[in-house]
Image (cartoon, rainbow, N blue to C red):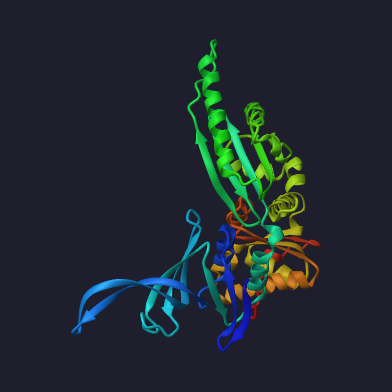
Length: 372
């Protein structure tokens, strides 16, 4: 954050977007009705004698009143659509425009009201200690999928696929194919993993392929210096759905416990266990969770960033109010990224769930008061 200041339209912050994670935080921070000031381009008609004869693309600063935002994970960018809310020689006041924001840009965000959810998102974005990443390599014979796990993102890094024939009596072709696969995967690791940023590299998969790959990888002189960063463990497969079991693995949890992803996975796992064994001490869905928050009954609450971001103004107040009530009563609130496996699972539970301090059997039968 470069600066934070108050003006005639509320309070504003100026941010420099330095990495992909900043783009995701920005996507959750800006909602319809906010204003974003930044650099954009627009094709401007050139007139002579009152007639349009040509066009030229101009670069200028715009203050855009946001109506819609689209996030692109591949390019790490956001496409904002809205109306011009500032004076400009290139665009009329109130005229529609679309601008793109990406890593390297500097923008100013203005809000009429910075609620606690907005302030929490901003503080998380500014917390450098949360920016460390964990790399996960899921590997089996002929296929390797690599992911980067941060506090809010699970990003596809690379994928390696090599045809490996089945092992027969004569295993020469199989062994040669596996060596080609290991070599290609090792090169992909070297070119895609930032060892200066990653805190741990988890290599997981079924059988002994993961172990054989690690022997091959650590035979490389340039990889030996990172040997202590690697953790080898079992996974049932080499695809994204196996991430859930990895996050619940004790060995993995002990290495990535500093990340919020680990805490979120632990809380969701505990929620499912409680829902199964003591269902009156767990609830999910907007009405039951908001009621439990009003009662001060929640020990831990989980809510997806998508639920907060896409809510109407009225519903956002309910969710933010519930978060504030849980914190005020000494509970913990986990805002879970929809980009993580945990967030995907939580979305299947309507995006909001809670663990309760004491049994509340009738929450699902009550209606949320209109005042909330």
